[in-house]
Amino acid sequence: MPLFMTMFLGAFNDNFFKSAMVILITYRLADESGIDARIAVTAAAGVFILPFVLFSAIAGQMADKYERSSLVRKVKILEIAVMGGAAIGFYSGSVWLLMVILFLMGAQSTLFGPLKYSILPQHLETGELIGANALVEMGTFLAILLGTIFGGVFVLGEWGLTTVSVLVVGIAVLGWAASLFIPPTRVIDPFREFRFNIFRETWKLMKDVWPRRDIFLSIIAISWFYFVGAMFLSQFPTYAKIVIGADEMVATMFLTVFSVGIGAGSLACNGLLKGEVSGKYVPWAALGIAASSVLLYFTSIRGAVAEGGALTTVGQFVRSPQNIAVLACLLAISFFGGLYIVPLYAIIQSRSGEDKLAGVTACCNITDSAFMVASSLAAAAMLRAGFTIPQIFLVTAALTIVASFVIRAAVREQMQKNKEISQE
Image (cartoon, rainbow, N blue to C red; front, side, top):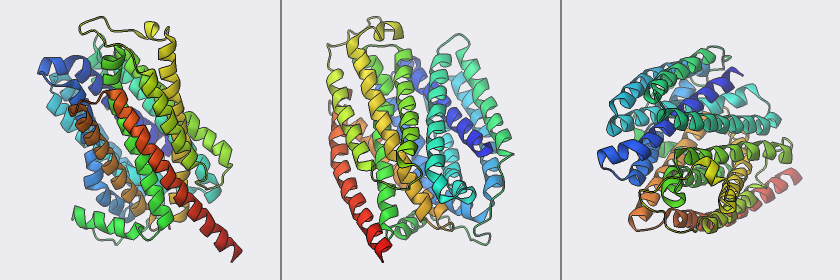
């Protein structure tokens, strides 16, 4: 419970800050600063992810060298300091300062990632990992849901910047308080020497994982999930405003529906697998994501939104059957996403040795972040090339169909190997 609450509050604060920042840029600061809201929002997604590429190898080393619960507490103290800077960024209205704070928040999250996932197997049996990861993913996306809602609601309201500034610091303090109760864990390698060559250590992590085909393919499959998720989440604010012609509350509703779907799919996965660590449903979940994305493209086809016209409110939005279909597609995409992601994390945790798990998790964070940065760059390139946001979703669907067949082949190969091993 202390680990869950620490994780929950951290994820809430990340998304509370990001949501408030993105909505503020989209609906106020972009026009004031004369920048393209679509490009700024897409760039923000990449700025948050970049630290995962740069610092994940160091984070993995730290998780092995030090006692993990005490390290979590130090990371949460860092979050408090960073959120103090966020308060200054909101008051100054500086897009560039907010981008710097976003980068620092990404760095703090990079340090926390290997700790969160490597602590679980130290306290749980293998048969409990599917359920535990389902709860972690559900809690993470519930935190995303609540953080997104409140960040979007508060930032443009009366006294919005004051409220947001106070809350980001206060929530960081609560996260640190929860971390005080996390039980200690066994130190993996207290005599490990730090190696600060980021590129060499990153390459070493990748080489260590490469021979383990089951783990390596699970990592790549997880990273594809983050590529797709980043593509959707980064476009929702401008999708709501430019394609749908809706206000910031509708953009928040899109993110809310997406988060609810991920949580529901994660819990459903635990019911389907009943504790079995298996990737047999992952390829079908990927096809479900792709099919739902294609449907989203067709439900997004509508007349041009008049510039300067009144934006559609939530009440007006939900009166349209076509708009309800948009929500249904978003819910389906995210539900299949929950089914997709949970078994992959359990496979990594159950098949990596205790002394290797932090490094494997760090490797996973590196590839996740690389795929998300690639997602941001691809989205920005398509926008500059004249693609509409629904067309970007359609391209993502086509790529996911290809990925589903690759994953299916890998799963079948691994299941065959497991069968041969059991027969021997």
